Image 1 (tube, rainbow, N blue to C red):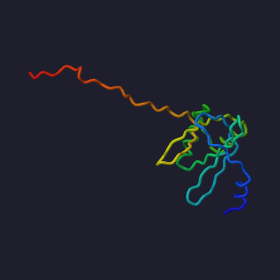
Image 2: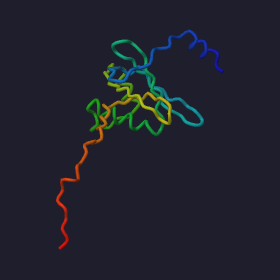
Image 3: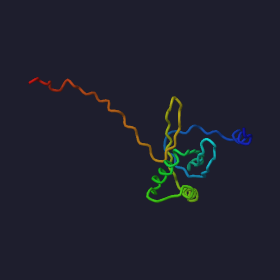
Length: 141
């Protein structure tokens, strides 16, 4: 184990759990993390109001979705972007980025997800009861 990382964790502050809802952030950094099994891009965001850091790791499968959703959120979906330059621009301009925190239970385990577009509200199922006794009986001919 990397003792420097352990010491860093030991001397850090563990934050309270995030609550569901909207957070306005700015991107602080993006970094390609080489990993033999599953490389990813590590993003660091900072909540504008509180200074709290949020870390989002995007693997190959979700990376394109993140780029697409950021472009939509910022009204840039109709222009070509090179991701590294796009992220550098967001950092340089301190562009406000909205992150919606959503909590779910998956396979019995709690998960906290970051969404870069407002989540679609789930509609409640129609629980109205239909009374079939009011229909006219069919009379054989």
